Image (tube, helix red, strand yellow):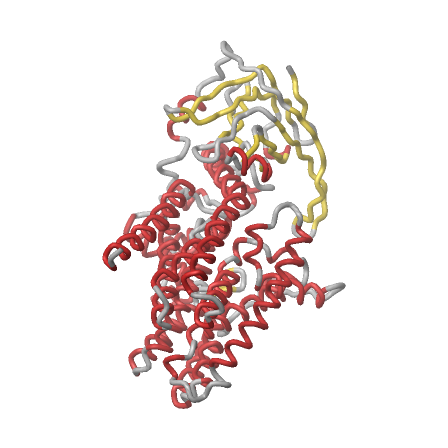
Length: 573
């Protein structure tokens, strides 16, 4: 087989992985803000409705949001508004995924700089282009604070290592400043870069880089106000949890295979993390301090920078999150950092060559395929639950100014009527557009479909801004409604006699490994969805199911009615 044929096959595989992943993002992403996404609307609305000087505008853009200065995410949102006339959250999600592809480009370039085969990048694509990273690829502001941040870090470190000219260093420092003002942990690029420069004995550039670090630190904390994220409570098993969560997050990629046993995940990921840390630190020492005669170009300084940045970030996460709840670190929000360390460990093995690289790449590719399948199985329920909840909230907010999947959303700032009226964000191209007419019409009771439902009621204690209280909830369960792996999903529809209509997500349930392996199905039939009683206007509601059909959606009502008030819920046939 000729080289041109091999290159064509390699290119086809790369394009296939990337295109398949982008199709998945396109099917899952919606133009609906999530939680902190609102900050982008708030800032634009404030700038639009006030008369600010350029300096006051910069100060507004630099205001901390949950302890982070997010100048770059806010600037990207403002740019999107200037281009499209509104803040399009799907556009922000595409920007974030372009950042993810940029990270993969830097991994590829660094592999080639280390004289590795171009085929070596295939496993890396397989474990990055998966639902494992859904929280930082399908959420606009969160994705910019993590994925775009990491792209800036990779670009800065790459320039610092491979382009030692004055211009290269200047651009690297500017990118490091941009990273610092994208998310709080972006500042960690400065100590990571300083270690690289000191290891390479580049004293003059170390002074320049260190000066940039001091300036960045001073600028970041100028007029800074601390918030909830920096409030660390040290109590009980804090230090034990801190150590466990740190090691576990280093090996956190094991979460793609976690199953239903969180204890197994904690122990296995901790063991993997500690072994990986010891192995990489030993390998870095052998390649740098213990190999002084090798030329600088042959030393993995770029990987060392990424490693240090990732480990320091994991340390901060362990302090702020893991010390309180050791399992809280296993969230997709922090998924990039264990993947970085996994990729560096894979690269170190390729350079060490314990076995021929062809075999190692093949084994890693096989693992990558398993990782892709495992993460799809583990995280697709979370992806679909969020998507359906957002779609349902989209409909309910437009009709009732309330998010039924949230507690007292009317008092929160997820959406604001004035900003919506001014068109700062728009709910265009609704996923339920083809169902709107049927949802707005009175219930069709001439063709009632039987629906086996189980209702359970319970109470939930909530500490509402320092005021403990107990609120009523109800749960609807069904075991027969089909739940396809892909598509538009299913929704519960509640409609009163005066045509008050609510759309609720029919939350799918995992069917388990046996169903997934034998039939390729992630969800078992049916759903289980829980809601707050007080979010509904007290009334009797006929229950319907909105499900996907070749024409768009099919709405069928049942012969069951649910009676809801603020404290009770009851099924009536």
